[in-house]
Amino acid sequence: MATGDRTPAVTAVESRTGGAAVKTVERATGTRALERSGRPHAALRTVVGQARAGGVNGTKESAAAAPPHGAPVSPHPCGPAPFPVPSGPFGPPGRERPDRAVAVRVVVFSDVDETIVACKSLIDFLGFYWGERYGAQGVRHARRLAAELAAMAGAGVSREEANRRYYRAWAGESAAAVAEAGRRWYHERSRRTGFFVPGTRAALDAHRAEGAVVALVSGSFPALLAPVAEAVGARHLLCARPEERGGVLTGELQDGPVIGEGKRRLVRRLLDRYPGADPRDCFAYGDHISDLAMLTEVGHPVIVGDDPGLVARLPGATRLK
Image (cartoon, rainbow, N blue to C red; front, top):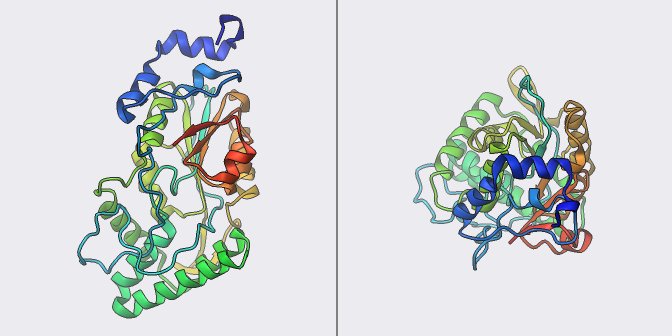
């Protein structure tokens, strides 16, 4: 980028960091950063790393329910896939941690499943929870639900409706028991090699080092996402919020699914809380076409992986392969 093309924001980052963020990502991924050519703010885009052969995502296989607690651990970061898994009908709003009294100039939004973590957390948690709590009968229940969700996806049912169906399956379960199981799920899964997508995590670390605020935007829910948010230093968690009454889950969502336009709505809502952050200077990371609404709300969309729908709609976006 020629000197004349630099905006004040880019100049400030370059003079402040001297490329430190780029080096951080390159060390973590072993690669050079990939810039989006022909667009402004290219210097800011260099916090994104391009993977070596094999890709930063490693395998993009969908993972399904894990074996009952105590069963042999699969080398896959999210366990084996003993039954059909939908392509991913999930997304929705969430709970936010309190703002800090700082002048924030850049907010970074990121999807979670197959963007930060290499699995579909909602599907993987089905087998973990139901198998642990109800044994063989619970495993069969989880398999039936996963198969139903896969059939819905194959029949063209909207991801929003499939997401609602997923949460209805939790009606009657103890909110405290689910939350505790979520912590155990994270503790077990995060110990496995490949649980986190290294390129995305390195990029988020680099953004935070430059003073950006990170927000996770996902159709999953706090029981699974809170420990992930803590691990990557996210200040905000915008996700599905299961409704509960008397400590028992009702099977409904408090504010609807966070998919597609649901993600856009939450992104805009959070940006309103940071008047000093220009959306054109902000970033968003996503791996699926359902992330498009979120990605188009910022000046720096980043595609993680090679979803053909996203690549077609955002041909000039930075990509993490």
